[in-house]
Image 1 (cartoon, each protein chain N blue to C red):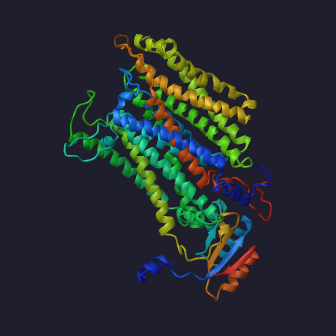
Image 2 (tube, rainbow over the protein chains, first blue to last red; image 1 turned 180 degrees about the horizontal axis):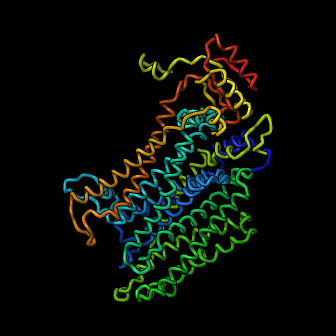
Image 3 (cartoon, rainbow over the protein chains, first blue to last red; image 1 turned 45 degrees about the vertical axis):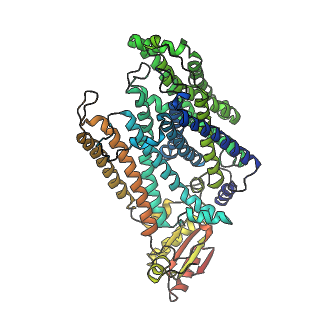
Length: 445
Length: 182
């Protein structure tokens, strides 16, 4: 953003221009998202009417596509907090142009993820049994269970990432309030909570924002660790590994950065934000993807090596089954998309090719969905006693329908967000620009 | 606007503060004006800026925001509540699971950790809101210009009619683009 044409006023106008007046293309996208959501709701209603038997569960695979989708969406969420909180603490200037999109993606991805445990329990109206509340039987949740840790972790993550997003939005909503007209001006006047950018407001805001980032940083690392313990605390071969927490966190950020690229490429194009979101930003995102992709590749190697070197027959059998059993196609999709594809990002030509990155990011998402499918479904199907139970697991239309619905749900919220609230942070993009001065500064060129 | 009973009206619609509003196009002229105002003995003026700048904070010599105390107290409270609910609820329905003690600390650390973050973050938000919305001086009673969220800096100096001319010349000397009386 070294170009001189990018001034404070340019930033406000460029981002305020993205709001309102949606075209036909926008409505077509929103319509498709809502249609997908309708498919999901239809499948969910069938599940409610006829029970979970409609999904492809078969002994011993009782955690399947719904839990896979849960882990997938929680994983997607993670890179948003990484970019908004961790890179904030590291004072990375480049994050300012992309963090709002990533953070909104976080909130909507957690909203999507949170639906799946509820769908998975079958009787959604008993969801409150997860919450510790005084009841006449004097029962309390089992706090030694990783499932309860998960509920606390996801609940905290959703709350904190939502308030973090809203907090950061307030000065930007005030900025668009002051250039908007009509009913939008009224909407922004209410949602900006009277923000005027006074020194008192900034003094408390910047401090508070710093502490929120400092709290969100360990939170984001803890959430996917806790999700991984849902599996690692059990003794299923293929799950029971101390590697799981860092392996899952790296995988989550890898998939999340992939999703950020998937979302940013069309937004940049449709909203004409080429001056604000440059190739430099995409290259940095690609580097994050490369780093976490390398950790994921390494984890795959360690996982397989430990299974062989550990010498336990069940563990060895589980990994043999994973690679060469009936689910070989899922395992090799995962290995190719996550273990081999990120190596392409070592090349600067590919990191700076936006179309290339877009294609890679979609394969990253596919690969990471299959990683969760392989870990969850294939590990369960390959349990040593499977040969006596004749497990055949195939997802049904109810599984695929609900999964499609989750994508509709996510994209619906995301599309509504980007057209109604600033999808790029106005005040933080201005912060990395040289401020207007009467006399040239000694510090800023 | 809807009429309010008198006590509510006094609370929510205080009368405007008389004073001078200056609009600046540059950061350094704003800083210059802040220094001159402080040298002339003004203390309760308000600076508007589209972005937070450390130079403005330094020029104003503001104390560190009390929001950090909210974060600390919230975090400690969350951690204690996490320890309390897990241990007390285990003791209230004692049942041995996994051959471990009824109240075992290691798994409960996860809950304590998450509660620390949750309460710390929520009380930070509360701290920001309480301090900016309710503890702000002269909120809503001073002049404002919509350009302050875009690309202009501003300073509002409360001044009665006796001091207005002096303040105006000070602000213009510092390089204000325009000065208005309100």
